[in-house]
Amino acid sequence: MTTAQSTVDSSDLDVQPTPLALLLLGREADPRSERGVECPGDLPSPSDPGLVERARAAKERLGDKVFVLGHHYQRDEVIQFADVTGDSFKLARDAAARPEAEYIVFCGVHFMAESADILTGDDQKVVLPDLAAGCSMADMATAEQVAECWDVLTEAGIAERVVPVSYMNSSADIKAFTGKHGGTICTSSNAKRALEWAFEQGEQVLFLPDQHLGRNTAVRDMGMSLEDCVVYNPHKPNGGLTAEQLRDAKMILWRGHCSVHGRFSLESVEDVRARIPGVNVLVHPECKHEVVAAADHVGSTEHIIQALEAAPAGSKWAIGTELNLVRRLANRFAAEDKEVVFLDKTVCFCSTMNRIDLPHLVWTLESLADGKLVNRIEVDRETERFAKLALERMLALP
Image (cartoon, rainbow, N blue to C red):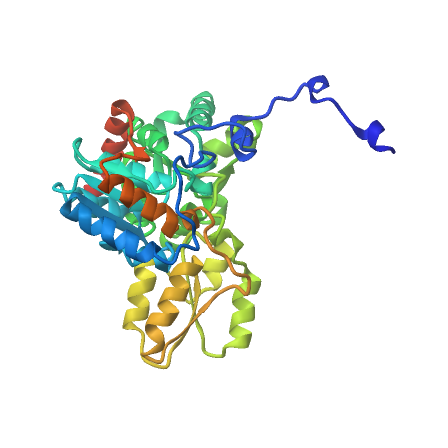
């Protein structure tokens, strides 16, 4: 077949690109999306040798007006300027505890900055150094898709007995949906408590957007079976499930996952055990179920850090989470004779987290110091009201 013969005019096809596809192709921009938005402004060159000093000087000019949050998965070059470090929810709460800070600079991703805006005061301004720093997992559940899912559950006659539980790693829209429909938010460390609460309110759970955290918590921590879980695929009619399958399930898991943690495999675990005798395998609960089942320990980023802090000298650890954190932990604990390695042989940074680099941070701090507000993340009042309701239900968990 010649090139001319294989060329097809797209106008002849009855196919329309989805909004997400347009974003991925760089042909549209949506501030409510987790990705696909270019960062405005002229960034300093990444080769500028004075970047560290410029960041330090701008931060000093701002003084108490700025509070910099650094997620565990951030680059070391950025983390050095963070006033506090932690996971997404801890950082959002830390921001809320600093009402005197006019600017909250969130070195993380879009959904984290949204959560900080929801929990901080109206006079505080949350800034994301790069608007294109999103989360592929959060992108896997849009407000329109979840509303359609709820219609499917309603048609199946089960919506009234289904309680939504949404992972913190979700957009403000999804958190608002959860709050509006009587559900709660969870983190990777309190997912069991959130599910226990949900089953006290209803008979079934719709877990958004990470299927692996939902499945691992239900099966590993709560004693359910894999057969109690079904996966709702938003790209298939009725989620790819029959009404009977929906009615019989205890856990309706959204078909979403973390692009970083989803890369770890059972082969990764078997390989590291063969290479490092006596190694402790410690993984994040966003990993696949077979990886979690084969690991020695499972926990959130905060749990991983605490486990290594408490580990005896001479112990060996293979960690299944984002590489920036693993590398930082390896360097930190080397002096205590603790060997820390990345679970997989393949280097795997979180690409969207890594969009927050020193040039973006310098540009942000210098702009704020010059009185120019940039890259503000602001959740509308209606969305904020219901999202905050879902977050407050989580905070009230025993």
